[in-house]
Length: 284
Image (cartoon, rainbow, N blue to C red; front, side, top):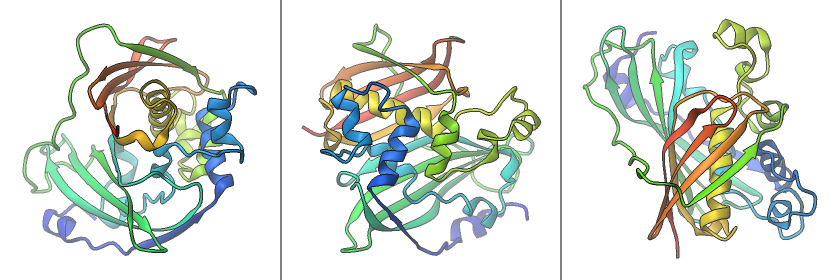
């Protein structure tokens, strides 16, 4: 089914309900590589029950659902996650029953053979009192769906990182089995676990989930700019610019400013930028 602009914008996807608990929150943090130092209390609080904290980036997996891609007719095989944005209404709880609602917020036609850009919104709220928890926006590059008749253009761009030396540089070596752990939080795309699928997509081996690298950068911001207090993060966003392989080292470069931070993530071993245009706003 080819994309149709009017049908795409009118698509009414049903709400979905999810339940997760403290153990799933700990599993998410372990998938990012936290807990590698058994005496580092600033990491242990994410992977044990004692004084448990939750990384805000976990919002991207607590209501994981990519079935909308097929519902709206996107060529799933050629779809690429371009950017991820998040706005928090309150801290992500360690356990909760939640309700999510997905909609196509914007769709841009790059032209025949050039693909399409979809801005997809996911609103997550508490099932207990209907209060908002977090709003997510994903930019999806649908490489096989250009020429569907939508408007030209692009989503509002993220700000560039400053052209000066970063204020903080935080390196984190990912685990060789990081993708196999992270996929247990919801995204079980075989691109991240099956060597044959990865090879068919042009990769020498399975790649790390982009949102795992994104979560790694989120932890670096919480550590360097928020005194390890997740509640201080108000929003967080970045563009995915290159794949990461499990076992590689992510070097997070961070620039601080009043009430905000910019960041970029490099792969140390190959000197490529994996995340760019990183931007976060902070609560006092």
